[in-house]
Amino acid sequence: MQRPPTLKQIAEQAGVHVSTASRVLRQLEPVDGWSESALRVREVAAELGYRPNMWAASLRTRKTTTIGVVMPRLTDGVVATTYQGIEEAATRAGYSVLLSSPPDDLDAQRRAIDLLVGRQVDGLLLSSLHIPGRPFVESLSAGSLPILTVTRHAEAGLPFVGGDDVRGGYLAARHLIDRGHTDVAVIAGPHHASTARDRVRGFRGAFAEASIPLPPDRILPSSFEVSGGVDAGRALLDRPDRPRAIFAVSDTVAIGVLGVTRDLGLSVPDDVALIGYNDIPVAAQLPVPLTTVRSPAHRIGTTAVTRALELLGGGDVGTELLPVELVVRSTT
Image (cartoon, rainbow, N blue to C red; front, side, top):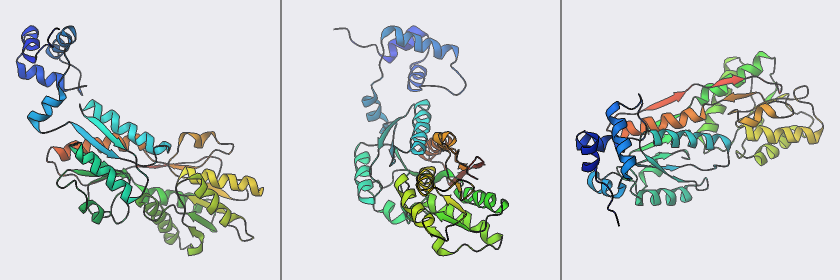
């Protein structure tokens, strides 16, 4: 049986130092393209059938070049797109990703994180924190492991990358106000999710700024699922004093509301205007295309990896909010 080639053999045949060969073969995709010597190293490695020994490398460096990711609801298109950005950016940087997608509750998340820590990941990306998040994070077995929160923040000073959800809620409200809507309701999502709370906060802020009341009974909690939109939508619309416009904090919730309007024989936007959030691909393809706030899900994922690598390198990382934009379609 032929023995696998060594780094020394590859370096000698490529005419470079061993450290150069090692560096080239650890990097999967450089930012500015391969140099001539790097291309030669990779050609020689391919000719000789070289395969890196990641286990041996981790023993030497005490690093696994692996990032752990805890992200619930991968069936949600926005969550899946964010994860795609994470995986693509990690691969470009020469890191692998270990993903766990537990239910959106703290006990399941703690078990998932403990498992990832046991796999000796170099850092953690958490996109499912509940408010408040600091006690939960401090209770983890992660110890001094670098942790960055993604999409949802913890209101506790942990490094965070996400969309500017307060701004997004504000844009949705201003859009309705500019079209003369004063009798509005909000389907607010779950209270434990910072994404939902921030979007509602921005929405309420715009109405307060315009001195338009937003009664508490017009703000209903829900899940992030279509069923949450159905339940809250029916509670708001199957009544004589139904609102003339609804802001739903996710597109999936808004889709549930659209189903209710169909069942009740209501016209959108003539009887009730509707705004969602995230701009999932199906939003533009609905029978009545959905007005929504676009959040940069893929960019959130890639930026999160960039900041996580800065953390791993000892850098100081804070909060980074990426811009969102209103996308006006037929439901308003």
